[in-house]
Image (cartoon, rainbow, N blue to C red; front, side, top):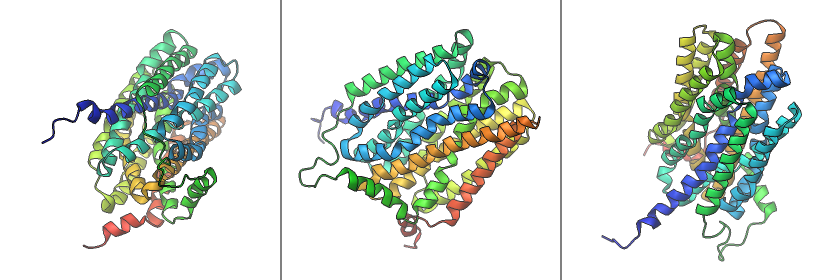
Length: 416
């Protein structure tokens, strides 16, 4: 047995992954601030529910739209350089948000934050795909999601307390400082032997060819189903946790800002633990498709019950259950990892992430529109909002079930 391999060498990839996860944690915090900041923002800027949905969705729209460029950047230039070049925009956006004199400036700040955070989780998943055993991809992605969930915890009770005792602007200042620290940690700890295209035996891929490879993913028949499901699954959880949870508890049940923050913290704890559990329970290519469809339909049923509920205890219990269930979405990353060749895994994961976050942006905007219509008619806004989310989940699951599956799924399902 060899004993001359230093432990630091074995730990180095883990240290780099944890440093990259720090940026992902900040991304998680930024994308869920609306649930806590909604009441003070509505009071200061007199926002309608639709404007609130647009504010929350601006981050996700920018984040999703940038995945095309992020995926190409990571494949051509590596994880470290892509993150270090992009993340300062998140810092700039947080500063602009803290100083925002108007609603439009606030939305612009969210766009900048979304652009800056765009490489955060994709960098982690691509790093795992390149530096760790493929058989551990789902479990390790789940672990990163769990650790990155610290950002969700920060936008629960801690942010609610800070906002209630100080102001929503102070919340953005604190997030700015934490983002600077995350960038510095990555600059210090993350190093790569070279860009993925730096092998002297392999011709360097041009930017145009890389873009064409990204676009060609849409020509594969199984891509449509993956996009359809990814468009609604994560969006359902983030739209609840990151936008409507706080207003629902405050308006429906009379909770204070800190009390709603306590519930958000509990939901975040459940969602933090869940991905690593589902990652370790990954059933493999032959059963993963059925798991994804089944858990999506179960999630839709929970949103229906939440829409119809009028008890604070029931609503909190259902919200916690949705948070715990949200971890099954990590199986989608494993599915994408298995569905595309290694040489384009960065762009395949980028496409998946792009559809996921554009789905969040569209769902938050659309539910904001639904809420505004309900409010204009003098009815409860949360029932139609939650039923809309449930309906979109069912639509996504059925579309995924009907569309062609990946070759890897077909091969694994054939009798041996």
